[in-house]
Length: 68
Image (cartoon, rainbow, N blue to C red; front, side):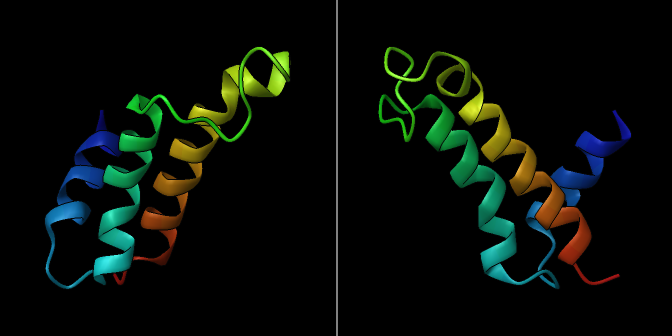
């Protein structure tokens, strides 16, 4: 819950660069879109988890690279 609150606050904080603030909304949009980097029917293991990996990387980059 604390991580979700942190990500929410960082996404709307004007001190955080716009590129970092856009990462999480773009990753959520990618997860909801019908386009896939690794289609589920071609690569079974990776295809099912690529959306989660991209969202996790976006959250990690936002939390680690945001100014303190």
